[in-house]
Length: 196
Image (cartoon, rainbow, N blue to C red):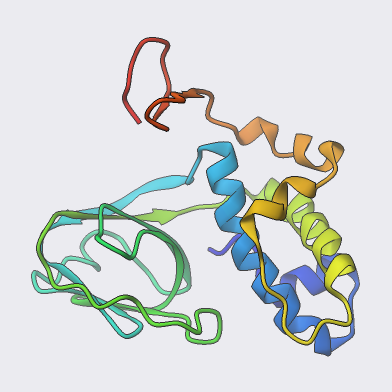
């Protein structure tokens, strides 16, 4: 299940102006990636696949071993991709078949970078906690307050530290604690370790 859709965000915030939908959706996608990074928590479930048979093209992820359904993937879910050459990140999938995952074309305007199967790609289903909906909607409300009147909103992740501290504190219960090594930029969960 996605963290927030534009429709759900508009319901939570009482927004009826449909012209704001594209701005809300752009901010929702950028925010969910940013908050997962900030919390060091991608809310992984037990539904995952690790395979060297995964490739990317257009808006489709393919698995020549057809393992997506067996791995527990279903339609209308968010996934986290790791260890690809150029496609790591969080994506929303609308269609699932044994050998393919298809992105939500309404949300993801850009195609994947074409990538042939080679290295082992790790794809995990994400399950966002229900309690994150309202603070996330409030963060998006903060964003659209700054972007109203702009025809096309763009999310600059460097600027997302602008959120009020009180709003950011609402997400702390979901933080996975660790520290970042300044020399390597590797996050560790335990003092003295270099595991990510």
